[in-house]
Image 1 (spheres, rainbow over the protein chains, first blue to last red):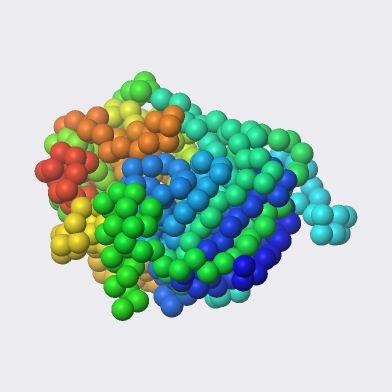
Image 2: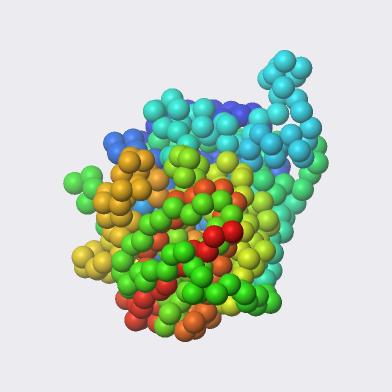
Length: 233
Length: 218
């Protein structure tokens, strides 16, 4: 174990995660949502790309064996273990208007740090610390959340999908600027503002070897890891 | 599949009518209230499309806002294209195809190496068309647009079904020659198109073809 960090429900966090480090992300209370974006700190125009991630792996969600691709065809991070089974990639984040419409107003003036926070402002605050802004805010991963489509494409949020103590282990295959918000999912059906806390636990996992589960999950991932490997030669 | 809605607009009365050849980019400004039509001239063509607020490209089409705010994955008549600020940018008012993709994004040299083979990098791609347009079209250069402004695009006429199990596939196209989608601008917008040159999958039936762009005044 290298370090641990608690992220109270609703709040935001960012940090540089070195290549070969893994994070266990734990849902501390059940029903958490952790919105995540990934950037290459050497070239912040290289960032997590939702469509490239989904179409390379023919999936609309993420779980064990899946990786997150940058727009440059490289594997940024990999899901090496997962007790949740489905992490949303397509629904984005809440903004201030959505949070107020759903949960009412709770400002810093009246609620201090129990104020209602939204995903967009949280991510923008963290992005701004690195000189990034709205133009860098792209479709994100929502860890712990599940949204399923019917045949016509109508979406349903699965309430109670992630239980207290559920976790996902994410290994970082590039140096990654990780930007997080633990604000509610935009399609969350609970009408009280009660975002769950998550915990990050970092350890040194090392690089993906030849027999790595994520590298071998599909041919596409094998080529993605080649691209990532070449970048660091 | 949703009900197909035809338009009553007469192409002879369009104030703009241009053909975008296979593999080419196209950019234009569309004013609030104008009607914008994309016509699939020969069928099964994917039209990779991004929209920006003409007032400033910081506000742009947002796939995730469009999906989450309507609780729906696919686009057709009645769908609103939402911006990253949660505002309606355009509303689809006619559609003879029936379904348009929000998840597949654009092909790129780099993603082609992952999806097909490491030696596919030299093949022409949508992102190359986007990059070329942003660096040469006056409507982009005076706004100082760059790769930073490229986010998940719409693929008009492309069929990317998602199953209840979360599987995603690139299915055979449901478009055909003469099918079109038409939308009303709810704000002044800048449109950026790549008429997709992909030759490695069935999104263009392995044969990229031209599309026509038309604009009518309100």
